[in-house]
Amino acid sequence: MSDENFVKNTDAAEKNYENQEEKEFTEDINELEKEQQCQEKDSNDEATDYEKLYNELQKKYEEKEKQANEYLDMLKRTMADFDNFRKRTNKEKESIYDDGIMNAVKNLLPVFDNLERALEYNNEDQSLIDGIKMVVKLFKDTMAKMNIEEIKALGEKFNPEFHNAVMHIEDKSYGENEIIEVLQKGYKYKDKILRYSMVKVAN
Image (cartoon, rainbow, N blue to C red):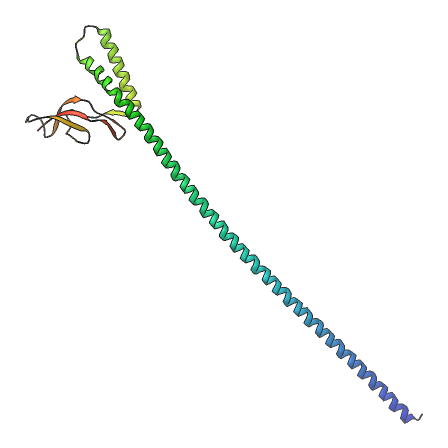
């Protein structure tokens, strides 16, 4: 083989080697690019999955929050209803209690009236008078503890909300609508009238 042919063959071999290296390098580059594209796709898919999961959790959270608010509103309404029921029940109990006291005292007032009348009569038996006075005082003390008050009448101006006028006279020595005599004492329990004062009014 001549030197010229040897050189040609050598150049051809080198060129083939370079072409083969370039080809392999290009293939490696393409492979790397494909791997990078796959990684980017996987990364995008993973991001999409995270976003989807976040949206699902956010939706569930909003549903639970709405449900919790509904339960809270229901609890508030129930507590308000119970509070109203408790107040109404207490008011009814108080009313029943007051009505019971008023009915009992109304039945006892005639007895008290007779005890006071007994003190107006002259009686030589001092021990009897003292006994009646003690009973009357006990009666008054007990009524005071029960918030029962005698309605002021004598010398007061006639008030139809508290007094019942059964007699009327004209007398310039008294003021207008002045109560000059109490025929029967009146009593009240708190702001309720147990019995109106039966009175005699002037002018």
